[in-house]
Structure formats: structure tokens, C-alpha cells
Image (cartoon, rainbow, N blue to C red; front, side, top):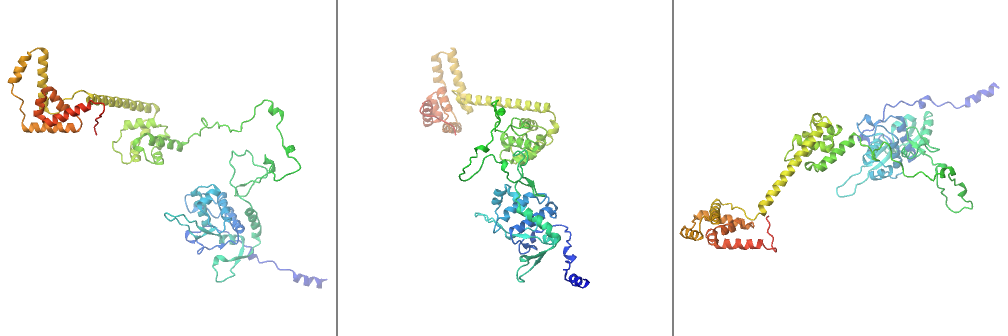
Length: 502
């Protein structure tokens, strides 16, 4: 018996060496930008999309890659959103995704898509084959990626690889085995890779999760469709059995009052008047938008910049009327080159000076009083201008003609008052020497009268004719100038001609 047992003991297989089961602890995972190309990558190309999604879930669950360790902006972790973007990439062959395509498929913004693509490259899961370009005047070309499996994944799970073709690049190596300690983890990753990580439902869509919904580790919620959740039977083709018997009706107690619940959602009590209450940032932007609309020298300025400039007064509860009152109190510039800069100077320390609603109300009242005074002043100016232009007669601008007109009016007043007899006036006129002007004075008067005629004004010539007579006016201005003035005056009284000033 002992002789039989000895050979059997010799035929038992020896256990595998313990060196194969030792998996080292990795310090971190990060691929610099210079190594994010296929030619410079240290990883290997994934044989299929299923194996690549196993590596994606391993990176998401290991925590070795932390984006904020290398930059101060963007997502904070490699989470469910990044896995959703990877799922879309796994279905593409070749992997040439456009930014607009990923935005449409995932519902993310352009910058979010770029962030998550950069995270996949930094984690060693993607490598550039061709980098997309944007040529001016032409269509944008999408980048082409290679789905990679990082070296850290092979080391952590004890995956052995072999290079079958010595002349081929290193990233073409294939899997030849796996350590025992990595088999259990590989099975879990296979289960996760078979799932579809979907966008989480909003809180308002359902109060409780549907039956059959479950959540993967660090991967968001994946909801299975339940037969009980469907309210409309969906069948294709004909059937001998009717589905009417399966339809449930509400009890009569629910229909006795005749009141049914409206499908229209009720307005939230937290919203004033059904509108969302603005937060601090919203109030800043609202005040900035009103300022750019009501202040002429702020038109065209960027609303975000004005919101940042007026942030202190907006946080203090100022309105656009309060800002106008303060600007009147502070003083405005006649010429503005940069509206946002001037507003920053004028609003400096305003919230500390007018720190109470009473002070702001007093400043607004003073501003409104100034506005009313300016309005009345404009009305008086317009009224005076209208009376001056629409009057029957205007005094001539020449001082010599004004003296002559005053003398003529004085004679008319004397005759009207009976101070002299008519025959005495004629005798005095016959004996009085005619008005003599120097050549320079006549030239000045004629130049002034001709300039006014070009503007459509005949008051200087017609006033001289009325005051001194036609002959005296012809001696001063010349016969041609007087004739033109009389024609223009007759035309101005006609309803078929309108004379305006340029």
C-alpha cells in the first residue's frame, strides 16, 4: 500500500510560484501631454471595446487618477460622467468623435466634453492618432483616438503580455495570462463593463426609485425597466385575448366629488409669483442689465463686466434708480471713453456713503428734482427759440441800419402823436440831406443782407424798405438785392412754398 501511494504523490501538480500572485501598490496614474500620442504611449491598444471598458471602470474605481492633482479647474474626479463619455467612444469604430456629436449624445456642454476627453488621455485610456484641426473658412476635422489600456492596469491585475511580432511597435502587445489575485477583480470589472451607465434621473421626475433600480459602485444609477411602471400596454400584432380586463379603474370614492387632480404641476411655494428667486449673482446681473439699458454711456458694455463692477451696490440692495441718484450726486463726465472703468470710479465707496435706504431715497429725490428743473429749462429754451423764429419782424444785425431804423420809428411816432403836421414832415424831408454811407459801410450791409438771403431771411432788407422807403433801400443794398428780397418775401407767404434752414 505504501508502494502504491508513493508514485501517486509524485504525480500531483506543484503549485504556481508566489511571485506571480504579488501585485504591487501603485502610487498614482498620470500621463503627461507628450506621451498622449499613440507613438509615444506606454500602454497597449485594447483588443475590443469590452476590454477597454473594463480598464475604464478600473481607473474610475481605483482612485489612482485625480484630475485636481495636476490642474486647478475642471472636474474633481474620474466619475460616472467620464464613464458615460467613454461608453460613447467605445461604440465608435474608428474612434473619431466630434465635439458636437458627444454634446448631443451626452447632453454636456462643449467645455465639459473637452474636460472629460482630456481626463481620458491623462489616465492613459486614450491616445491621439490624428489631432483635429480647424482651418479658417473650412469645416473642422475631428480627432481620431486609439483606445488604450494603461500599463498600471496590467501591473495591478497581474496581466502578462507578450510581443508576438518583434518588428511591431510596443503598443501592439497582446495578453497571455493573468494572476490568480486579479481574476476576481477582473470578473467584477466584466460585470460593470456589461452595464450601461446612464444619466441620473432628475429629482422631480420620480419620488421613489422604480423597482429593479440599483446603483453600481462609483458609477451612478442604472435603472431597469419594470413592467409595473408602464401605464400603456405595448403590443405588436393581433391577439385573441383582450387587454381590457387588465385595465384598472379608480374607485367610486375618488369620483364622487367630481374633482380630479390637474396634470399641470403646481408652482413651488419657494418661488415668488411662480418665478425663481434670484440669488446674489442673479441680482448682480439683473442690475448690470438694467444699467446697460438705461444709461447711454454704458450701452455696448459687457453685462458680466458691469455686474462685477456693481457687485458691491447690488449686494447692498441698490436698484437702478438708486444708482442714478448716486451718479447725479457724484457727478458724471461729458466724454466717456470706457464706460465700465468710469462706472467703477463713480461707484467706489458708494455703498458706505449711502448706507441706509433713507439716504438713498434722499439722493433719488434730489436727482428727480434736478431732472424736473432741467426739463423746465429745456421747455423755456424751446419756447423762446420758437417765438424768435416765428415772430413778424427781427431787428437787423448791423448797427448802422439799427440807428436808421430807430430814427425812422421816431419820426413815425412823432407823426402819430401829432407833434408835427404832415406838410412840415414833407418839408423837413425835402430839406434834410439824404442819408450818406461810406463805401465800406454799404459793402458790409450788402454782404450781411446777401448772407441772410441765402439762408432765406429777408428781415434786414424788408425792414429797411418799410422804415426808410424803397428808394433809400435800393441806394443802400442795390436794386437787384432789394428785388430778390421782395420776391423771397412774397414766396414765403405763399402756401405752395416752404423755406427751411439746413
